[in-house]
Length: 451
Image (cartoon, rainbow, N blue to C red; front, side, top):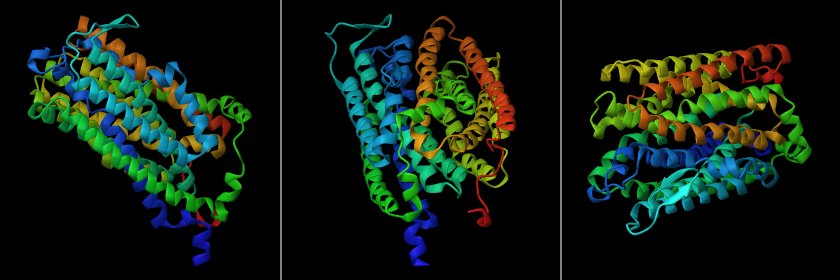
């Protein structure tokens, strides 16, 4: 028995669940930092003499989209996938965590430096104050490491959990990541108000160092998996650049990619504006508005693993994806209505949390069903790369829209129609799965007699 465990380390529940906890911790710290400045929009827009940075809504919108700039416009996210498939999980993950630390250091400099006598920067028709320009640069560098970490963790989950509880593992990993988002949305503003605007970023740096150390521990365990007989056949099937065509010719890949662009463009940018939405439209106190926004990520902490377990055991992955997208559509159209009760806002955020759990819990385990493992890093990177177009453009567009329509009606309609597009894409995905036989509706856990 000891020999079998040595040969197949990932068949050991203790080993693979330990790996899950370690890499999910690194991802959770990245998610915390990604959203740590989202609840600070109202503080950032205060005059400098009142403790703010004097930003405008357009400045904040530009900053919010900056996390995707290098990934999208310099194709770094695409190259991240190639680096992952050629250099491996351990090298890429360590590089990614280090980039997140560097980017956050630059953001800290942007918030703390004295730029009072410095001219503004003109970028892409935006006239940015120096603090916003430097913060955007830091966020852009952080974004490279953040997205690189995402694809690295995804591939590591497939590597360790294929044939086992893959959707549950990805669900727990997503839940821990959402815990990072929820924590950032909940505590960032109170900490900044009671201490200093830079304090949440100092906390972020310490969290990222914990994430980097956690990933280095994972590297030790993953090296042991390399020596196991059960993975040698996979690892020796090396990635070639011609394998990119395998992914590009797959219609299922393009449907998943389009869904991700639309779905996540209707969620991630919305969360960056939701705290101010709660204050301006629903009259929520600024100190607790972040808790309203954190309902969505907090709800996913329990529900995402649950829906992942359902997919593992009973299948119906695309059905779960469609349901989640339709719920998100209903939420955004609900926010566009002229209702100003905080109870309505809470109810809509609860529904959003369910939809935000359903779709990702089933979506990401679908990818390895249509893409070979050796191409998986490149496939994830191309999905994230195209997805980042939406995450870069939507915040800038919404930021300017909110200047002309401070009621948030127009911006919520933008999010609503984006989510509706995701739901329609998922319906086409269901038809394609039936035609191509991907098995996206089938359970992930293989019975013992099929292994």
